[in-house]
Image (cartoon, rainbow, N blue to C red):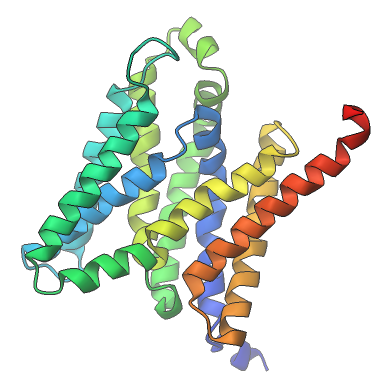
Length: 280
């Protein structure tokens, strides 16, 4: 019975989602607190552009060369977002606009490069939807190892990152170099995305990062509870989406995204019901 469970088709994708959501749910709390909602989508597209360029230059999609290109492009993106950090209202162009511009330009550049690549159309499709159903246990092991290192990095520096995300004025009063710390945050963030995009795709990466955190923020602002609620929501959406996908033969990635949307709607409705007497 155990052997059948281990070799079942849906177990590996489910475990991969649980590993991914473990780090994405925590990073999503920071993203929402910083109000840079689309930064993961933008960095994911920058990483995808790096992979597309590598394929155009003759690299295999899952090769070390392709990964190095993706990580290099992501590092440049992390530096750009760190340098463009501004105080709210201190500039005519908010950082979120710059993030959106980077996303659009990276998407357009990716399409141009893919148009000249032998298998460009297939590469773009893989980047958007990933290959979750075909993920293997060695890939999951590498993913878990990398995320453990990134998680340890954030655990050691959690006070700094949480203060900068939730109370940047206090961080400035202490004389911290926010742009430098932003670079390290976005770089670690980019490493996570570089590993997760080939497996689950750009769209699902965005859902893993933002939706569980958005659900958690419906109920609390306490850092520990935010991470726990985010992780539970991410695991629940992943499990439901994958099981329904296998049962009714539906595309896994889009279905998991839709389940995330339903859970967010239910969380919002629950929040409204819980606070109805108080509002009255």
